[in-house]
Length: 185
Length: 361
Image (cartoon, rainbow over all chains, first blue to last red; front, side, top):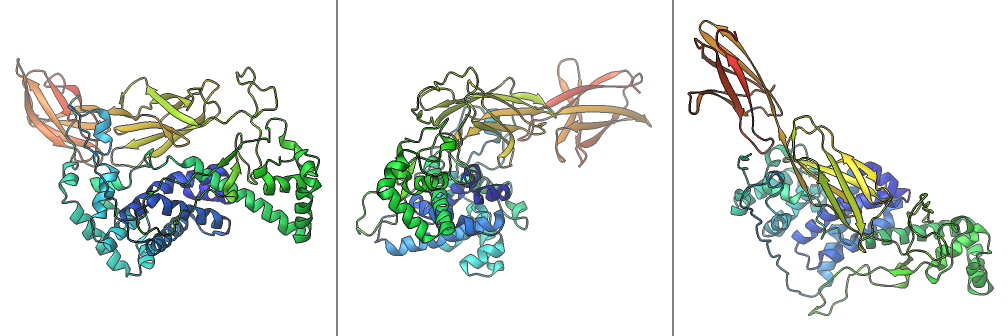
C-alpha cells in the first residue's frame, strides 16, 4: 500500500503524500521520542521538510522509503543533539491505566498497554539498544538496513533487539497486559 | 512490525503491539501543516520547472512584468495562462491568481495561511539556535486552497451537487471546513462467524456542519493484528457514509477515519458455529465436533444434563482443521448432550446440542 501512495506522492498527489504521512509520522515521532530528543516534533518536522524536498528525486519502493525517512530522521536528531545546549530531558508521564469493571468487547481486542507507556519503557533502555528496538519494531526496518544505519553487524542487531524485548517483557506493566481473560457473555 | 525473521516470537507481545499501534489523534494532529508543506513544495517545483523550461531570461522578464506593470495584469488575470500560472506560483503569496480555467468555481483571493511551527519548549537555558524547520517565513506562506489540489498544485474545482445547500453565487471563496468529529455506529455488536458488519457514520466539521464528498475509511483490527483498511467511501450531502466490513472471523474493533479524525472504536464479537455428529462403535459413541470461527488448540467440552445441572462428560482439543473428537460410552437411551466452547480473545463462547444414543445412531 505504501508503494502506491509513494508513486502518487512523487507525482504530486496530496492524497498519496498524506497516506504516507499518516502511516509513518506516528512511528517517526515514537522513534524520536524514545531517542530522548527533547523536541521530537521539531526534528520530525525538519525530517519531513527534507523528505518532501527530496521526494521527487527519491527512487525506490516503500521499504526503501522507510529506510530513507528514518535515516534522515536519525541524522537530523544527531544534528539537533549537537547543536543544542544542555537541556533537561522531559520525562514522559505514563498514562493512567484504563480499567473497567468488566471487560467489554472493545477491551478484549484493544491494546491494554498504551503506546506512550511502551515508548517510555523502551526509552529506559540504554540508548543504542533503544534505538535498535525502535528501528526494528516501530520503524519496521530490516535487520540489514538497521545494521547499516547504526554501523553494527546484522547479528548484533538481531541479538540486541531480542535481548531488549525479552528484558522489557519482564516489566510488570507488560506482563499485566499479557494473556487475555476469557470473555463472559 | 518486526520482519519475518523475528516476527513470530514477539508477535503477541503486548509491548510490541503497543509500539506498533496506529497513530493516535495527538500524533496526527498537525496533518494540515504537513499538507501545506507538501503543497508549498509542489508549487515551488512547478515554478522551477517553468523557469527551467523557459530559461532564466524569460523568468526574469516575467518577474519584471510581475513587479512592474505586470502586477496589475497578473491581478487582472490578463496574462497568458502559462505566464499567469507562473506568476501565481511565484507571487501567489501576495494574491496573484491562477489562470482562467480554474476561475469558475474557485476564487483566487484566497486567504494566506502561515504554517505554524509545531509546539516546542519555549525555555532554552542554553539559548542555542532553534532547529525548527517550520519557522514562519515568507517562503512557507501558502495560499489556502478550496478543494483538492492536482499534481501541479493547481486547484481543482469542486462541483456543487444539485440541490446542495451551500451558496454558490458570488465570487467569495468559502472558508474550507476542517473535519472535527466523526461518529460511527453499527446495528449489532455480535455476529456469527463469517458475517459482515455495516458501519454508518457522519463526518462533521469543527463548526458542526456535516462535511460532504469527503473520503471516509473503515478500519478493522482483529485480535493481535494491526489496523487494516476494510472499505472507503465518500460522504453524502449530509455527511453520512455507510461502509461494510468483509466477513469477520475473529473479534474485531472497527473505526472510521477521515483526514486524521477518528471515530470512537466499535467492538464486534464473533460467535463461532459448532457442528457435531456421532458414530457408534463397540459400545462407544464418538462425537466429531467441527467449529467454524475457532482456532487450533481451542477446547470443546461435552456436557449432559443430570436433571438439575450440566455434568461434563468429555473434552476435545481442536486440531488445525478446527475439528475434534469426544468419545463417550453409548447411552442406553437417547441422550442430548451440550457441546460448548469457551470465549477467547478471538471469539465469543458458543454451544450447540447433539443427540446421541440408540435412535441417534
